Image (cartoon, rainbow, N blue to C red; front, side, top):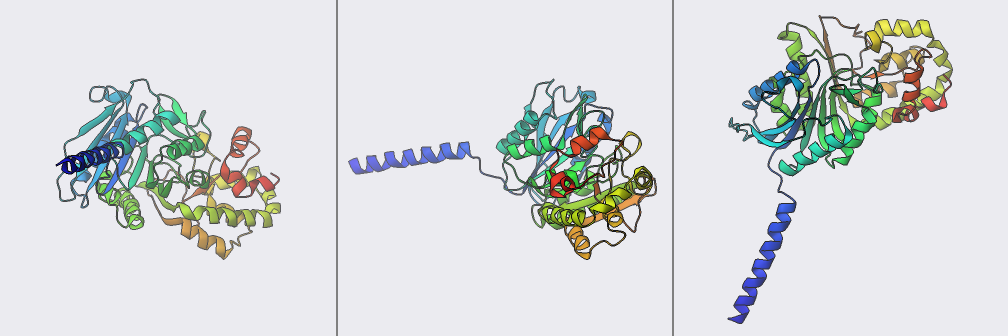
Length: 390
C-alpha cells in the first residue's frame, strides 16, 4: 500500500512539472501565424484600415489551418480601436473562420515604430499565438534605406519613424525568424534594406517604387500567406496576386514588386564588391549630369526622394560599360526570384529591358547627409563602397 501511495505521489509530481513546463512554453498550433502590423496614425489611415476588411474577406478562402493576427494603431479609427490593439482570427482551412478575438490592448500614446514596442508586440504574438512558422506584414508609409528625418525610412506613427537598421534589430530581438516579411509600403525593395534584413526572414516581398495607398489586395493573397507549405511558391503566388489585381481590377494600373530570397544576398554583395573593385575608375562617370539622367530613366523615388534609389541592374550596367558579367546576372536571379510591374498609370519610368525589381543608392555629392548615413549601412562595406573614392 505504501508503494502505491509513493508511486501515486511521484506520478502527481511529474504531471505537475509537465503542466508547468507546458504553461511556460505553449504548444504551437497548426499552420502558420501571420502578424499584420499596421501603423496607421497618419494621412492614409483609412486606406490602411481597409486592409483589415480585405484580410477578413480572404480568410474564407484559406485552405490550411492558421492564425492571422493584426496589430492596429490608427488615429482615425478611435471609435472601434480607441487604443493600439492586437487581435486575431483562427481558420481551420475548411472554410471556418473564428470571430475576431482581442488579445491585448496597449497604451494610447505608445510609439508603434519604436524598437521596444515592435519587439514587445512580436513577443506577445509568439506567446499568445505560438507557431512553428511565422509570417509578417508591415503596413505604413516608407522611404526605404533613407535616414529618419524629412524622409520616413519606415513607418509614420503621428510623425514617429524608424531607421531600417533599428527595425532589423527589433525583429532580431523578438527571437522569431520569419518565413517571409511583406512590406505594404513604398520604396522598400532596395539592396540596402534587404541586406540589413537578411538574417530575420527567408523571403521578402517588397516594392522598389511607390505603392498606391490602397495597398495590397489581401483578399487575393491571404490564402497564400497563411499556407505553411511550399513557402517559396506561396510568396511568389502572393506577389503575382498583387500584380494581377493592379493589372486587371484596380482603377489605377500601377504596381512594382519583387520577391527576394535573403540567403542569396551575401553572394550578391560579394560579387558586387568584386565588380566595384574592377571598375571603380568608372565611378567618375556618375557626375551630376549622369545622375540626373539616371533619375529620369531608372530612378524609383520622386520629388524630394529623387536620386535616392535607382535600378540596381542599371547601375551595374553603366558601371561595367554595358558589359554586365554573367555571374552577376545569375546571382541577381537567385536573389530576386520573382519580379514584375504594371505601369499603365505611370509614376516613374520602368525600363522593361533593365528592370531588376530592386534598387540601390549611388552616392551623389549634392546629398551630403544621405552620403554620411549611407556609410553607416552594412551594404556600404559589404558591396565595396568603402574601398572606392567618390
